[in-house]
Length: 166
View (spheres, rainbow, N blue to C red):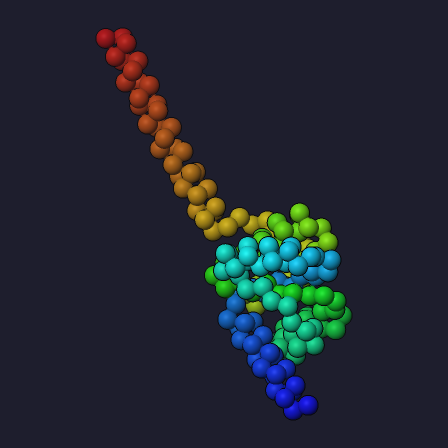
């Protein structure tokens, strides 16, 4: 009995550490997925630097209380849940899970915490629609490049026109 309590205490400590060190934690209901589908999801998550783990709900509730996330309670944290912890990109877990859910409708986003703020399912879905940092930088650079490119084309056209007239 004492050994079981020690193991549970270690797991709670692990969850607390992950919640404290991650910039986001998204809870998803994975009910109905096959082992192959979960393996595929874990691979995608790992490649993106996201940690995807399944824990007992009671242990997650206990860890969430220690961290101060009161919304991870008996009402919301029920069923077959997994948590995706994002470390570098806070939006990555939500984005990856949303994309995965499009092809695997059995799975369902439930809630999450992003940079200390609680998000329900609807807000997590909105968050998932935000492009990645790289995409945003590419769009910014593209919009900065457009006026310069247009100016270069204009100067080139004027130069060609003057050559034709001469």
